[in-house]
Length: 180
Image (cartoon, rainbow, N blue to C red; front, side, top):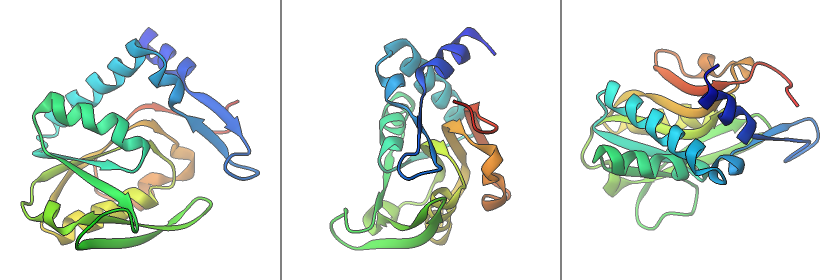
């Protein structure tokens, strides 16, 4: 691990039993409290966007917004918001999905899907891949190609790659079990 990855690991807080018993929550707010580590994350995600040839960035609500917005700005790319159902005005395209601890659905405004591109989807964390799979489906059905998925944290022990076959996935740090 590089010192930046060591610093990144140290900045991620582990919160047991949140949002319900048995879930270990990986909290990215410690990253935001450390400008150097936050900058490292944005820089690495921006490099990934350029390497993937992205023509647009998608941000998954809510913590994905924090990382995707500066990446889109840094790369000079449009930012498409993927929000929870009922949070966007106007016509939307919606998709339901299963979470590791429940069910939910996401939406994208139809107006934001009017100009298909090669899109990189960014989130703070990949757990089971359900949210990202739903987002990829919305974009594909709207004529976009998926440049890949990028996230700060990956939890491969939850088998997210199974939910995202054929999509390049890049994470800055992976956790492989019940770290505390």
